[in-house]
Length: 498
Image (cartoon, rainbow, N blue to C red; front, side, top):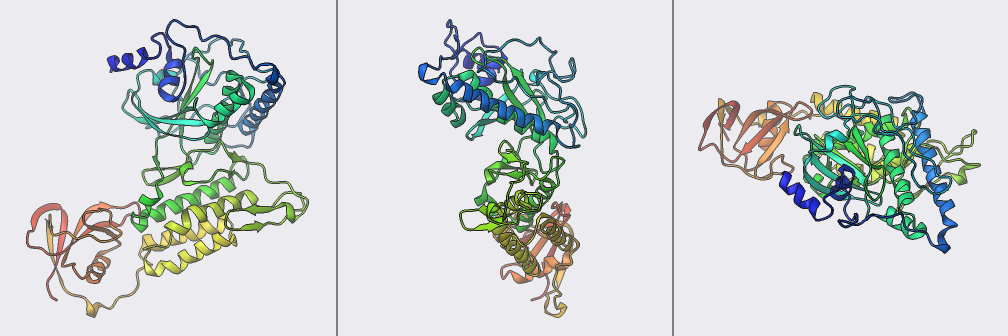
C-alpha cells in the first residue's frame, strides 16, 4: 500500500503533506504545483476585476453570517456560544485530533471574514452509540481504497476505508466543479473563491450537527489542513450511504419501498419541527439522499433554508413546480404559511411517493396509500397528517390487520416437513427479494398458503428463519418437492392435495 501511495504522489509532488494528498486524491481536477516549483501567489485579478474583489468579500461574508446563524440558532444538539477557533481544534489532544496551531494571516479579499464557528463537539464516530470525540486529520493519514462516488456543483464525494476497517464518506470542494470554476473566472481570486465554496461545506456540516436525526446523515468529523496551493482546505467525514437509484428501487419489494417513503415522512416531520425552525430543501432530488441499511437519509444540506418567505399578501406565496403551482396564505405576521413544509412535501410526492408507494402494495392497503399520494400531490395535508397516515399503514402491515379474510374451504392441504428445505425447483415472481427465485415476506403461515395458492406454478414453500425490517418472515415458493434436504434453520410445506 505504501508503494502504491508513493507512486501516486510521485506523479504530482513528492513533497506534499496531508493537505495536498487530500486535495489530490479527494478532489479530482486539482492542479498542484509541479515538483521543484513554488505555487506562487494567487492570480492577480487584473485591472478589470479589482472592483469585483469587494463583491467576492461580500458574498463570503454573507455565507459566513449564514453559517453563524445556524451555529447559534435554537436549542438543539450542538447549540451554545460559538467558538472562534479552527474547525479541527475541538478538544485539543483528544483521540484523532491534532493540537491547536497558532493562527496565521491569510490573504483574503478586503472585508472577507475568517472561518465561522465550528459545530459543537460530541458527534459520534463510526461504530459509536453515543456522543464522543470527533474523527480528525489523524484518522485520514492511513486510509485505503479511495473511490470516487460523485460530485455536484460544489463538492466531490469519495469513499475510503479508515485504518480500523470502517468505510466512510469524505466530502471536499471539487476543484474542477462549477462553483469554484465560475467564481475564479469572474473574480480571478482562487483562494477567495475556494473559501466561498467551502462555506457551503461548512454550512452543511453545521446543519448535519444541528439537525441530528435517524434520517439525517451522521457527521463523524472533519480535517482542516493546508495544501501548498490553498491554505485551510476542508474535508468532512460522514457516514457512508448508497446512492438512491430509482430504477433499482422500482424493482424491489413493496415493503422496502414503503420503508423509504416512511423514512422520508419522518425526515420531513423532523425538518418541519427542527430546533432551527422549519427547514426546506431547495435542491430536493433523489441524488440528495442516500440509503443506509434500507433507511433513507438526507446527505446534501448546503442548499437548505430555514427562513420562511416574507409576504404582504397571498400573491407573494406562490409555490412553483414544473407541473403545477400552488398559492399559500400570507399570515398576519407577514410570512407565507408553511411554505417550507409544503415545498418539501410536494417534492416528496413528485420524486418518491407517486412512484414507490402504491405499486404492488397489498390490495387492502391501496386505498389508504392512494389517499396519501393524492393528498400530498394536492397539498391538502401537511407533514403531520402525512406522517400519521404513513405510520398507520406501518401498523396495519406489521400487525397483520391488512390481511383480508379468506375462505378456508378453497385451500389445499399442506404437509409440514420440519428442519428441511428444497434447494432447487425455483421460479421467478415479482416483486421478489431474490431475482432468481420467488422470495417473499409473509405475516404468518396462512398468508404463505394464500400466496402459494395464488401462483399457478407453486406446489411447495420453504419458511426461513430470516425476517425483514418489520419482523415478517421470508419464504421461498417452489414448483415442486422432488429433492428435499435437511436444514435445521428452515421448514418446508408441500401441497398434499390438489
